[in-house]
Length: 144
Image (tube, rainbow, N blue to C red; front, side, top):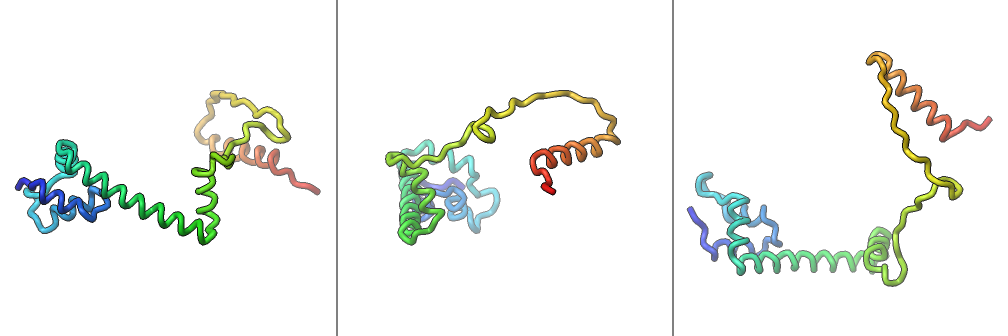
């Protein structure tokens, strides 16, 4: 069964532009051979500017709802929302997230060295554990 443009428009409305929802609205209760595939839906939307525009408008509506909820969280002084707002929208005011590219005390970061070592399989786990212990001792020395 081929779906009409009107049937697809009806399925898009209220879907938030989420294709899984559109397909569910179109295909529920239909026998397998009459169902529209995800690829078929994508092709129909791509080929029809009216369907594409309607899908975009549905997505925009969901984006608006998301922005409204986000703004409410900022107004409620939710820390996660304030941090995200300043990170993405506060750049003009100098709020930026950055990464430090120096080591401890401002020293250069160590450069990575690659070395190939052939180890008998039975000794591999022991060697890995010894290396891990050595690294832990260096990074977290025990004070006496």
